[in-house]
Length: 150
Image (cartoon, rainbow, N blue to C red; front, top):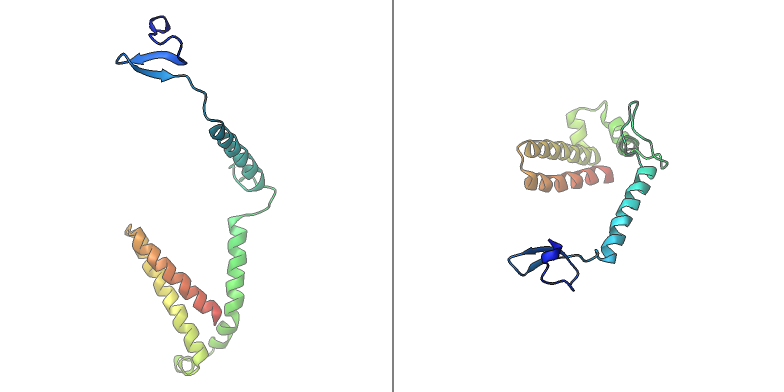
């Protein structure tokens, strides 16, 4: 193909279509090459720092020691410690006594709103209504913030 190249002085591969459309043999841009190699370096660094690769007896742990389960348990302990006072006060009271105490009433109503929001979020997600589910997600996080603020 290159022996029939009508543009011999040009930096092309010799692939020519429709008598004038040519495939040029230009090097890739330097910035693109740097970004490519930086992304490979990022993956290697991430793989060393965080758990990433599955193995036969478990995944790699990473040198940071981070895991989703550990982060979840820390958050759960934080929530449970924030709720412990209210749960202890509510334990032996009747519904009338809870409604008579404005502090406990606010806590139970906020917790009920959270349960409702979580239920609606799950139903919307199951039905595939992601945009509506995201609206309920923001409502649920507001409810959780209200419960934790009490």
